[in-house]
Length: 126
Image (tube, rainbow, N blue to C red; front, side):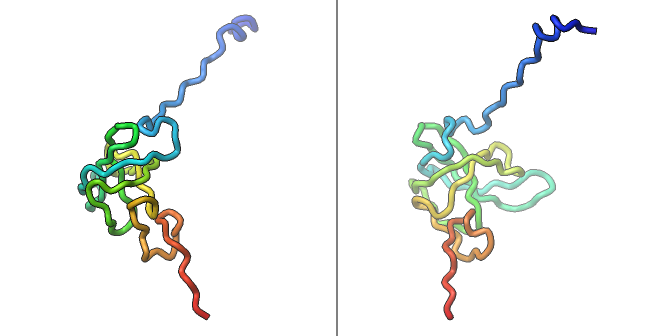
């Protein structure tokens, strides 16, 4: 058994947390320009065509960012705002675009979870 001196001298060092969103350089979001729009198919049990944009960030790094929601209005050279966030069934896609900001339009058909898709509250006529 270890003595009290040994316990104090050899304390365990904390494991450093790996930064998975390196392209954002510690910032919550970064602006980028779409270079190419493509669809990717997800990993094994799922089947779909996920919309992905190849984006050059303002830091000159090139990443793949997922475009959430149904439909989009992006084209090459559209300006988007990118945040961190994995798409679990798309390998290598670790970022998401933010709807309703810059050139990316909100999803207008949303009634629930509107804040994630940049949709305004619908007007209620009385």
